[in-house]
Structures are given as C-alpha cells and as structure tokens.
Length: 495
Ligand SMILES: Nc1ncnc2c1ncn2[C@@H]1O[C@H](COP(=O)(O)OP(=O)(O)OP(=O)(O)O)[C@@H](O)[C@H]1O
Ligand SMILES: [Mg+2]
Image 1: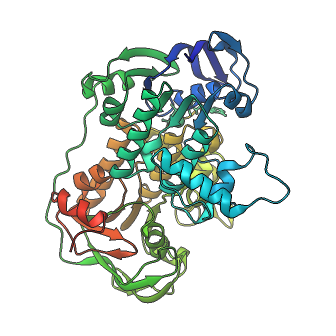
Image 2: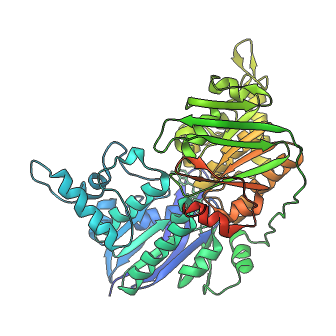
Image 3: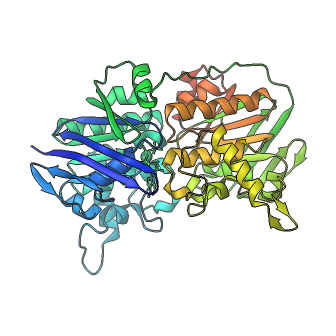
C-alpha cells in the first residue's frame, strides 16, 4: 500500500513570495487527488517539491511511512513518484522512443532503434496512449508530446503520477483517453495528482479536490461539490463568466486566405478562409492537423508555397513578420516559450517587447525606459498579472501569469486582427474569463479574431463561425452550436 505524505511544506521565494505555506496533505494508494488554485497559488511549486525538482525550505516528505529526502527527480522516481510538467522536458532532437527509454534503461553499445521503438509503442498501447516510437519529438504537436511525457513516466514504473495541467493541451477525445488511463491507474492501486483549471474535468476524474490559495491549503471538497463553490474557493470570491453578445459582423473580410498551401507535417493544403471585421472565427481541430502551419503562415514566419493571403485589402504573401505586425496583425502564440517571450528578461521588458519603436518609447535610438515601465505597470494592472514587481524575471512567474503577460502585450497594442492560438491554455477560471472578455471587446470594437483552439468549449462559446482543420484542410464554415457536425469533422468522418 503506497502512500505519499507532505507534511508542513514551506517554500519561500525572495523577496516576497510565499509559494507554499505550511501545506500538509496525503495521497493514498488508488486515489485521484485534484489540486486546484488560481494562477500563482503554488500548485506547481508544491508538486515540484514532491517530485524532487525543488527543495522545500521546511517540512518533510514521507513515502510509505518512511521519511525521504528527494535530492533530484531521479531520487523521486526511485521512490515511485514522477511528474509530467506543465512545460515539457523532452529532448526535441531525439525520437519518441529514445525520450521514453533514455536515462532509464542501459542499452548495449549499439541500440536496436527499431526494436526500442516497437517496444515503446507496445507499452504505450497497453496503457491506452498512441505514440509513434520513431518520430522525432521536435516534429510532434504539443498534444502528442504530452502523451510521450506520460508514457515516459509510466514506463519508469511510477506509483504516484503527478500531472500538471495535462489536459490544457488535449482535445476532448484525448482528454477522455487520458481519464481512462488515470482511472485504470487508480483501479490498479496507483495514485494520481491532477492539477487543472478545468473544473468540470476535476469533478469528473477526481476522488478528492484540494484547493490552494496564496500558497495555503484552504479547503478539501468532494468532486460532487458545485463548480461555483470550487471557483469561489480558489479566488476567494464569486466568479462571473462573461456572456458574449453575438452581434452581426460587417461583410468586409479583414483577413483572408485563398487556396493557401505551405510546408509542414501537415502543412496547409488548399486552405481558404475569411474573417470579417467584428467577428470571432474559430478554428477547431485535433492538435497536429496543421494548426501550427496556419498560425505561422499568418504571422509570416512560414512562407506560403501557393495561394493568397490578404490583410485589409493588401496582399501579403511575401511580407516579413515585422511588416505584417505593422499592419495590425498580432498573435498570441501557441508555443509561448519559443515564440512569445524572453524568459530571462524582466516582466516589463516582455510587456513592451515589440512596441519599443511604435509607441514612442524610443527617442533618438534610445529607449525611453520610464515611459515603457509606466506602460508595463498599466498592463500589469489592467490584466491582473500577479508578480512581485515588473522587474522580476518572466521565468519566475507562474505559468498562467506568463501567459497573461503575452496576452496583455498583444491585445494591449490595439490590434486590427488577432491570431489567438490556444490563448487560455493554462489559465485559471478568472484569467480565462478575462482573456475571453478582451477578445469579445476587440470584436465589439470591430476587430477580427481568428481563434485557433483545441478547446471545443472555448470555440463554441466565443466563435461566430467555425472552421474545422483536419489534415491540413479546412471544412466549410459551421455554426458554433452544431457540435455534432464539428465533432464529426474533427474526427475526419463527415462529408
Ligand atoms: N523560481 C522562482 N523564483 C521566484 N518565484 C517563483 C519561482 N517559481 C515560482 N515562483 C512564484 O511562486 C508562486 C507560485 O507559483 P506556481 O508556479 O507554483 O503557481 P501555480 O499555482 O502552479 O500557477 P499556474 O496555475 O499559473 O501554473 C508564484 O507567485 C510564482 O511567481
Ligand atoms: Mg503551475
């Protein structure tokens, strides 16, 4: 009977963040424990401590009745505790199988790559997760990478699996698959700690719900607790979701693609779509069907091999990313770590990253630091970004707050068109509501939004029209309330 206990855990980040304050909890064999809390509540930090990534300042960890000191993730794995991180830790250049096996099995001098790939695939299939053993991780979409992370942990025989926002990158069908794996693990006597911002998922999969607020464990509830109550416990006050008011859009397309083709796996194959001014258009689809190619083609970092790209009447197939941005198209990138931020730079620098010249922070080639900082302070306030100060490194903010920095910078620039790719991935209920509100406000002002999201609820809630992306092609537009048709198109089974 394995059991993990965290006792009086404390973690302080100078100068003023008490990330974990006297947290005690027990995870028993065969149970699924959900950990809820706002962005910055301390969920990731607490679980990093439980999995040997971070050392606590105080408190102790007891595994199966024995006090343990976890000096590294390897130590933790040896004790049967493994974590799948919010931001993946895979090695991009290696294959799926190499990532799963590496550092765990000692191969001979010559690794039989084929056999290894097949072995990993067979193991993955056994736990209900499909992965292609010999593909390179760098070629995989995020959803696929995450499956590899989970397979990797299970392959190492963990008994307590910690999943940090695992469904943030999954489609509804993949999420269902993951929940089956989680339930099977629990039925087999293993335990799962499940961090999520999606309350309905938490009540679907968890046996117990723990709520953290400002580093403290403030409540425990059964999964049957009303969602409103859970949300209120997280933020300390009732949360209201914005109700989008659908209004007729103008008939003028601001953004359009005609027969667009691009490289990629898959790339765009004859994609035609349009977004009108005053409209939110959703791109639904399972991750890995060309979303990244679409996002990159629109911001100019992936060139089109054919077809047209028109922004406000101007043809931009050959335009540079900077030229496209100057014409008022901004993006919330799906890969924020790669495309959206400079992690080692400060919050304020990240908030004004692209705007230095345009907003007049640059005078005679010099940066007007005071004006830029004032602007950053204002964005921090408007978008409720939780940080110690604007001088803090972006890397030190919680995942959700990093995303808020990017959203604030992009939407705060007063754009004409936003390409929003997975814009609320990893955000808590309050922050998600505030991003949705910002997108709706942009629409009300006559802006155009292309919302690329694997979250079907989000698409159906916000979009005026929906295209489904499947194997690099888009469907005819579908009404957002026709979920059945959207689902069929996502699975590639509709006419
Ligand atoms: N290495 C670090 N240095 C300084 N502060 C940190 C560091 N890591 C985390 N923090 C701070 O600790 C607090 C808790 O962060 P944590 O990442 O645990 O939050 P979280 O609950 O996982 O949030 P999210 O839902 O956004 O992922 C935040 O205020 C964060 O800025
Ligand atoms: Mg986190």
